Image (cartoon, rainbow, N blue to C red; front, side, top):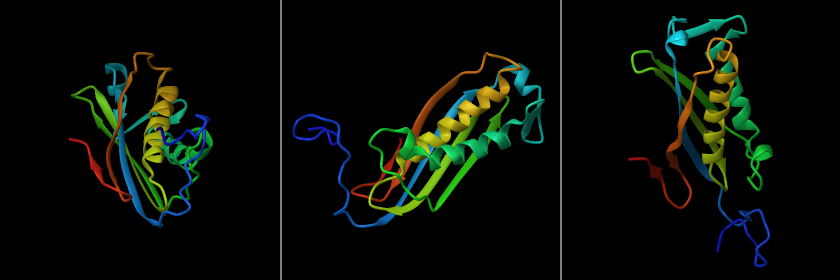
Length: 157
């Protein structure tokens, strides 16, 4: 049986009320292509455009997205985050950037969705701000790298 369906196969939020509050962490990444036109604008770890600093804006958007995950994903529990860190690492030679989102909370359920949402919203913001330079940007390989807490930990191989 799927956890988000009740006995009548209707959508239902999972009841986590009986679970203990524990420390939960998650780390997700989104990889985004960095076409040559954008790589040429990279200076001191940032891409500045007429819209403003792309990386800094994407970082703020990623944190905001992680905080609103419970409003965006149906049946996802709203969680108070203890910490949310977004890091954008450019690799101009490899033609991409990596957007890492690390999230932490003390709760009855995990923060994987918050980490994935944070990385994805940051990637979407990067695209939105950089599309004036090129539409050749590709958001790819959004995935969970690690989670701790709960029944079992996970680490991508």
